[in-house]
Length: 433
Image (cartoon, rainbow, N blue to C red; front, side, top):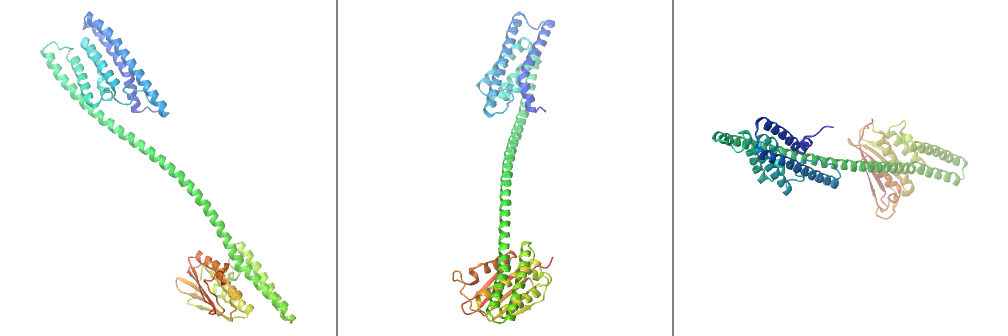
């Protein structure tokens, strides 16, 4: 698992003071043995201050680990322990930095090589001290480092003082430059952390939106399935109404005519017609179940199928009926042709059942971008505003309109008591596939 930069710094701040104190103590002791850099009193003082510095670091390390463990228990995630102030600068952090800096300064006064330990102040002053005190901490550290580099504290002569002043200025400038660069890097790190946090929030929102979209999609699929079932039910209802119901009506009419007349030969003709209607209705029912088009369109175009349908209807009802085609005939999409044929059959069936007409007319008009079908009769008509009046009160007109609307078309009704009825269907032209 890769170690992040923050984790490396955390380890340095925790273990670095121990290492620097150990290295500084070893080198200072070796230098003292070979060069006699300290007198007896200074050796005793150094032997006392080194354990104090170690104890100070142990106390601070334990405090940081307790704080990190408390933060982990609050939010349930691991927090790397760092040897700098948890949660930012505070009184304890300032006290720790001040005591450690004083110990480093005193040890460097006794032996310049203890500056190895004192230099830790360059690294963590920005973390342990408030902004207004961090520069002071850096300057004190620069004093300690300049004293060590110029030959020890206090400077022994004018040359040493001059060297101390120059080295102090150099250390102070370098510390401020590195502090500024560190602050900028900390700002960039904070910005990156904020960006990562915002991206995590955006990802969480995106996942929530995706989950909601999946739920909505499932609901839409269910609704589409239910709508398809309902549409199929309406289609079958319309087909039954337009084929079986009309066929049964014709069969009943023929059977009544066969039983009402005294002439056996005429009755036989009516029975044959009833049988033909029954066979035709059975074929239409099977085609409806299979979602096929009307049988009349299987071998004929729409005008020819309408002409045969009108002729059969006129022969059966005895109504003087004329069929007319206007415009230039064009091949139509099967669904358009089937829809117009069904509308014509329903309109004629309504005229037979309700109008009592003596004359009727069916006109199919090719009008460029749309096809118009008009069915008129001179029957008794009705008041379309009356509740349940005429074909508008049953399934007939509703079914015709539903068929036309599937093709983005319309069906209009014009009628009045004693003035006959006119049904007009308009659908957009759609060529054959």
